Image 1 (spheres, rainbow, N blue to C red):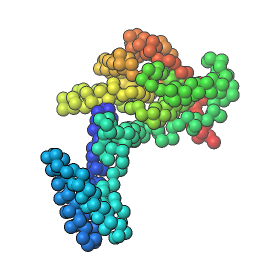
Image 2 (image 1 turned 90 degrees about the vertical axis):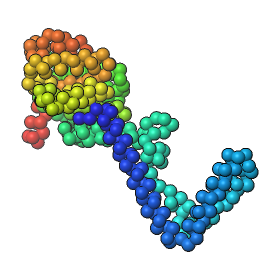
Image 3 (image 1 turned 30 degrees about the vertical axis):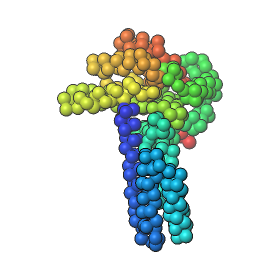
Image 4 (image 1 turned 45 degrees about the vertical axis):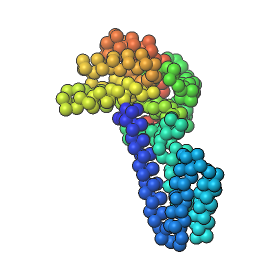
Length: 326
């Protein structure tokens, strides 16, 4: 999992590689065209000489108008030779992937949108390797899998309740910004919590925010392994930085990780850091009993979660079993 800075650097390396390729291709094309178009080499040399003379005239206060006129005439001769050979006047210019920044990654001192698009694509690929993001969208969450009957524990009409939950989560994703609330998606297994969280991730990524998705067991096991391996201390810092600094962190399957003193300490620190920086986090969990939550994570952590998250309760029957039966 890359930090935002690492993601930016990777995207910039890709953009710079594109620029180098475009310039190399242009050099190859130039050599080919020079060999194929008689008189072009001489015309280009004359153009360069006129350019030097125009620069010197401007520096010495000489007749720049005459020098610029000669420069323009020399340029037109080059263009005419190319056109007569059946080639456009710009055929020798590098063909950059992004015409806006010419594959430099910067426009007017700011990061170009092409770099931001690359960062989104790289993050999406990273999440897709760890999840089913490519099929997890709101339009693939079908209400027909939530029965038109009352939930025995709450008395709610399951389909009506879940319709409201999904509408809220869709609106949350579409309106997401750095002031968005933390969410705790809870309910029994197989009710669509992970699907909904990934659907939010897909929308938020397209809005240009950095999203990190990890399962709770994966995050804490990786952190603990790096923590107790003296050769991997940098890995622990990088992973914590990535999880702390993401615009949206999705921590899936909370409650299925191995609990240890280290895990509880890191979890509390991560919660505090993200809350202090006002960075939204989405948790999913099969634990519906608040008392069990408190016993597992301590009163301090359970209180932090309860006080900082909006709860979205998923009800119904296991959708995976329903789909398997079809």
